[in-house]
Structures are given as C-alpha cells and as structure tokens.
Image (cartoon, rainbow, N blue to C red; front, side, top):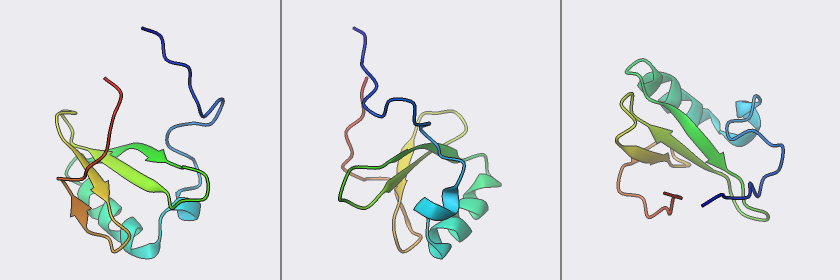
Amino acid sequence: MVYEHKRGEVDPVPDNLLKFLNEAQLMTYHGVERFGWYIKFIRRPLFQRSVCVLTDPEGSMIAVLEDDGSINENADIQLRT
C-alpha cells in the first residue's frame, strides 16, 4: 500500500528545531542524543502543539518528548505500519 505524504515537501525533522522545541526539550534531547536516541519525526498538526517523537538506536522503541522535557515511553501515539 502506498501512502500519500500529507506534509508534502516538508521534512519529517525540520532544520530549525528551535522553532518546534522549547529549552527543556532541547536540553533533554541533547542528553539522550549521547546514548544514540534521535528524532524520528516532529508531528506538526494545524492549530495544535507539535509532538516530537524520538526513537532508540535500534529503532525498536519510540518515545514522545513532552513539553516539560520528560520522555514518555508509553505515549498514546498512532504510527503508520
């Protein structure tokens, strides 16, 4: 099955992270980045807050980087298969 990209030409991880992540999120992200975690994508729905989704180095776990800088490994987020 082929999915149509709803975001069009927008990259899943924008170059300007400062626009989408607050200071607490950036500090946490730089900390977990040392352990191989990286941003899988930033969900940017219209008229709602952005959601930053991280994944571990193996790609087997995902987590949401919350507004307060905490990492939620049990987030209720739907992904395409």
